[in-house]
Amino acid sequence: MNHHLVRATEAETLTGDPGALIELLADTGTTGGALTANRTVFRTGADGAPPHFHTKASELFFVLDGELEVLLGEDVVVLKKGDLLVVPPRTPHAFGAVEGKEADVLFVFAPAMGRFDYYRLLDRVHRGETEPKEIGASQERFDNHYVDSPEWRKARSH
Image 1: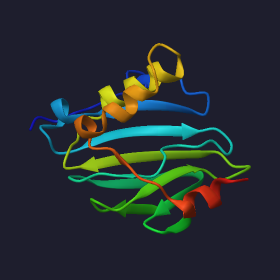
Image 2: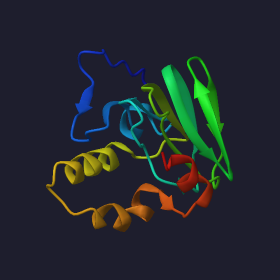
Image 3: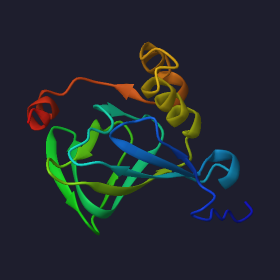
Image 4: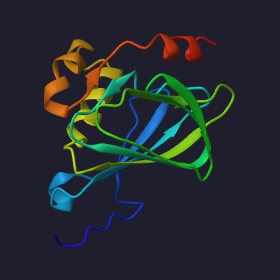
């Protein structure tokens, strides 16, 4: 693998989600399959991903600033600035900014999962350019398998 450098001014930023900005940093093609990375800034109390799991990759969360509420299996935990969490494959998880707080989070998937097209799909859904059902239809392609979580519904019912 050759090195991969992304300057802050060069990262593709997706702005369609009214609750978050997503910066695309590294994907499978640029890392030789080693990892995928993005940075997401969640607005105050904004929801992130609903409960889901991945079958192949572990997902790392590193909170750069703010507070992130995370479903981890059947538990809900709060990550604060400087906290790191690694979610192994097949573990249901979800996340969103804590009510009244923003969250700035670095996400890394290893081994790499082609994620940029998934984030672009979400962006198109938020912009009304495609139907939300396209996300459900993409579960196998992007290894996002959605699940129900009463714990998460309870935690996020502000």
